[in-house]
Amino acid sequence: MTEAKPTGRGQAQQFSDSESKLIAELREQLPEIAQEAAAATETPVASALWGVELLPSADAAERDLRVDVILAKFLKARNGDVKLAREMLVNTLKWRAEFGIAGILDEQFPEEVFGNVGYLYGHDGSGRPVTYNFYGGLDNKLVFGDLERFLRWRVQLHERGMQQLDFVDVADMVQVHDYEGVGLLSYDKFARAASKATVQLMSDNYPETLSTKIFANVPGWGETIFNIIGRWLSDETKRKFVVVSKASAPAALVQHIGEDIPEKFRAVPEPVADAAPADPEGQEPAAGTKDGDLPDSEAAAAGATATSSAPEPQPAHLDAAESLPKPTDGTDIQVNSEALQPAPATITAAPEAQPAADVPDDLATDTAGMRFDDQTDPKQEMSTAQK
Image (cartoon, rainbow, N blue to C red; front, side, top):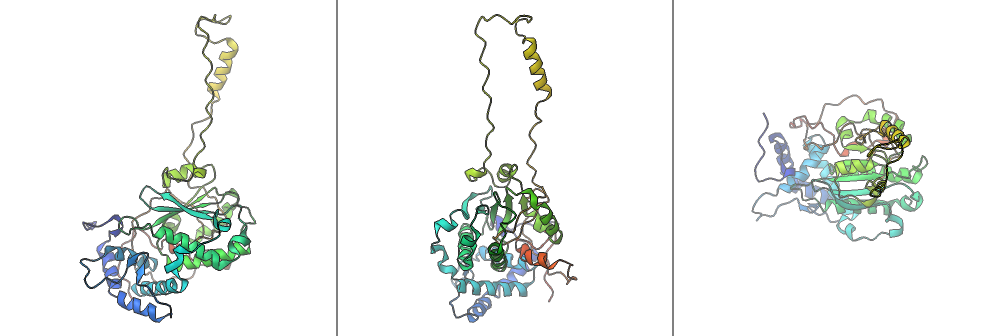
């Protein structure tokens, strides 16, 4: 039986009874969580996260359901384990204080370095903000060589997107990664270091903040790499990824975002052939033809055109197994396995320990943090974690 949705709640604030119980359990611990985070660092710790105050004032008229949405993200990232979700939230509050998040939106970064690396642009059909990241034609040493500066720029970009979430109807974002111009040698030591650091930072401190990741203009030479990596990723994780070639990118972005996309991603209209000039009035028909007929040579050409015309355009192939180097945005890349429509967030209990998969060391490292977007099967019911 489907549980009734509570009335008076936004789209992002719908939870099942089992989810609500875990959220309530974690919410009761918020005062202790704030105290624990404050005790773990000498830097003052804010009790607000992504613009939402986690500790309600004594005179609050009603419960702030936005807090529930945020807590659900930490619970889902830890498979419904309240203890682990609490630990993650403590560490996030501590990290934000030490990283200086309070002032990061006011920081200035050189336009000549980061102007072509990424930006926010528009929203998808559900109101989610969209960030664009570019990897082709970069001077990796210039962009990634100062790792601390790059990480602060990258966090600022993500925080700007977070500022646009209301946690009522919109609680996550869309990311587009453009790999036009990326070559086999693009993933050098500077890019690798930035990728590893960003993956760890995002997976630790921004759980469940992405709805869809679109990898556009993907070169075909990466197919084998990502088919291999995909073997160690969950179907739910892969479901959030859309990987498309240059030819399919415009249609893919329109399908998953809408018409509000940057100019460079819009399809270029095919040129329309000029119409043949009308025959002058009263012109005599060519020899051997009747009125309205084509001369024999023109009729033959028309017949050839009719029988060899190009087929109708086919829908963009969004499931192409194409791949690319590691992004430096917080996750590795995966091939989309079906048309992506993000399922409602669900929280599941922590599963029993399973034997470690026989994953090569290099792939295990490269895909670390891959599941920060989603670690659960959306079809599963959430139940209280047993500890």
